[in-house]
Length: 326
Ligand SMILES: C[S@@+](CC[C@H](N)C(=O)[O-])C[C@H]1O[C@@H](n2cnc3c(N)ncnc32)[C@H](O)[C@@H]1O
Image (cartoon, rainbow, N blue to C red):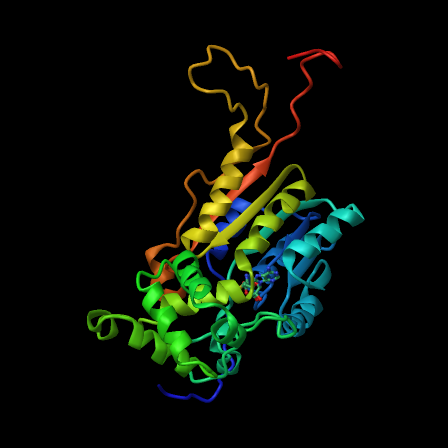
């Protein structure tokens, strides 16, 4: 393991052209960027909103708040930053009566966070075990590996990282307590996997780090809470766009948007619709959009990205008299 001096890096926005094309921000609109990160998407969105538009950016990382100042300074539109979990921030915006024309998510961590070695997101640097997007959050990776029962750690590695050797890695983690650094965790993983994986291609700790990061930041619960709130903030014609980086994220977005676009839920054997449910939305990117080979070559971190966009439809006109049974 090599310890490198921290070099501040930029985050290259992923699927940026596709986000602008399918999210279609227009002058004068209100856009909420729920995952400001390095501000790459926000900058492009702001350029399209013009003087009558509004960009609301959210991130729970205080370092993102600092980067926001630079973007707000140059932005042609009105801007506002909310430092919070996006699920909470969207609920507050809904309570304020905010209506959005486009809500954007770009899940996970930014390159800036991964490359800030001292934050412990990366298995490539020796650092204290942390992995919190919000450094004031209660639970860090150190708490997870040192305090959670072995069975819960194994479940986390299996569920959040699809880790085949979850049980033996969890056993090694518990046997080596206390673990203090990312190197301690990497060594526990290496001891918990068979030699063919330990000496195979790629770092065997990749899935464990992803799984623990997701648990530390409760990322999946935040997505589940945020999607319905974001949808409620959309006016008819407004869009929801989400970029996912692994199947746990993408499955949630897909299921949510497909349900909004489905309408009728009657069994196929029914000759006529009995449920009366109308689609609330339509899918703009039917199967989702992946990065081009050129983007992946330029930015390998984009390789697993997947963009889905849907538009909210106006409510269908009521077809039955008030009080009528359908
Ligand atoms: C992939 S980066 C976004 C990069 C950004 N789109 C850009 O172009 O620079 C994800 C960002 O979302 C933030 N984030 C992730 N989950 C969050 C949540 N539940 N609430 C608020 N911010 C979150 C992270 O702190 C990180 O800065």
